[in-house]
Image (cartoon, rainbow, N blue to C red; front, side):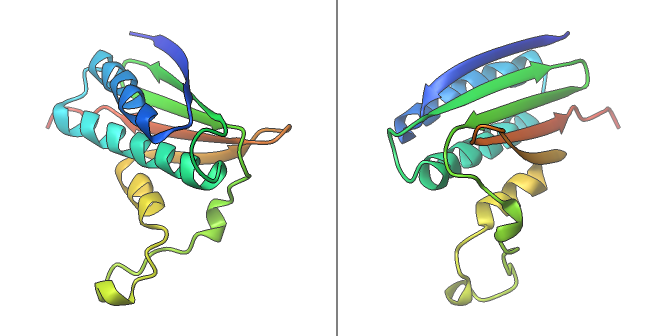
Amino acid sequence: MDRTETRVFVAQYESLAAIDEFVAGAADQASFDDCTAYQVRLAVDEACSNIIEHAYGGEGSGTIECTYHVQDDLMTVVLRDHGDRFDPQSVPEPNLSADLRDRNGGGLGLHLIRKIMDEVQFDFEPGGGNVLTLVKHKETGS
């Protein structure tokens, strides 16, 4: 199996359901188990929410291009936006052992994405915008 598809979505929170459906279909094509499919969907949802909130500063001011590539043993999702440049090094690691009242609240989504995906890569478009590549490998039998 080797399949690639791209769709462009309006950068609005109401688009998250359509993006989720698109990615769920790809995870199904990749024959991911329910848990792995959910992990990919969760990571993409968090990334798209961050694009809307941080790259575009809110709803309706841009698009999110979502491309998936399914191969025999992995699935890659590439998210492109034309919003403000994002530097992942500027986001501190969350202190997960701190009391909830003492946490700054930032960085949890990025931490989650990095924990549940096998590969996470941030790049920048030469003309502006961001490219986020997320890779999930299919679990092999025990």
